[in-house]
Length: 69
Image (cartoon, rainbow, N blue to C red; front, side, top):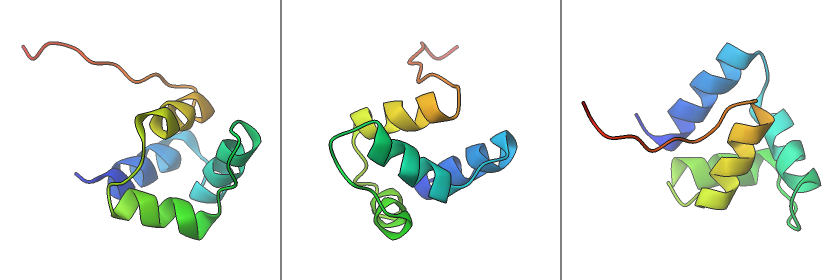
């Protein structure tokens, strides 16, 4: 699954939208995000780790690296 589909799936499960995420990112960083800009970054897989951490925070989730079983 690519970044855009993963994030869209998570937002749907959490009952929110990419618009909310763009606004959240703008409010919690020193950069302005639009829905279009965020969507493009996700589609192109050019989203930064720090941005994904903020997305996880907005969704009340955390990014976790764990060993494969």
